[in-house]
Length: 233
Image 1 (cartoon, helix red, strand yellow):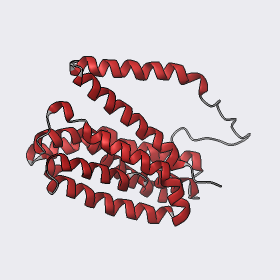
Image 2 (cartoon, rainbow, N blue to C red):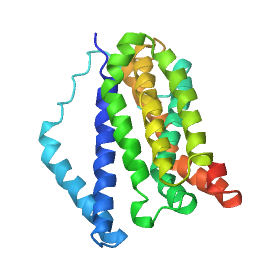
Image 3 (cartoon, helix red, strand yellow):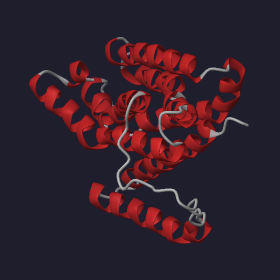
Image 4 (spheres, one colour):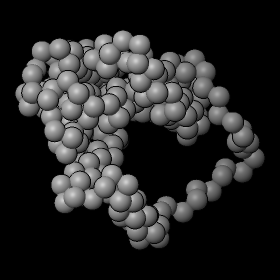
């Protein structure tokens, strides 16, 4: 009976902070991008091996219940998945293109390019740790989704077109605060809908959302090639 999804998502953001922070440290120490990325990969691999023993056991399947081999989203589940795709595209734009925005248009030195995603990840983690409390107070995931969409879009336009130099980091931070609870609220809505079983719906919504990981950032780059990165973003 408690809201927990935002807190779970906070640890994804904490991982982003650690990754961006480590990469910045390695580059500052003089490692090449290849060896810096390799060092980060080895850290992640070590953690995966260490925490493997803590994974939850496989849940028993109810007797007589057939589980489809492919969870096809339909109705409200498909709509939630499409909004989640946009949410992941918004987060991915910061992660994959934020550094180029700072170094190419905000006069940042290359070794400080990762500061944008670091600030964004810090504020998004803080907001997500408080997100369950906020959802409990507001009492409606739908209201939070609308507020997140409007406020995060405004902050991104502010970052791209208004804030110069290091002030752009303020925009990254504000966008993290505004965008933080969009994805968790969408997953909460998915769990409450009645069109599909919750576990199948969450799987389907996640699949639709992660399509953005394949097409979102390359699409931004394609548009930027024919216009400019700020215009594309």
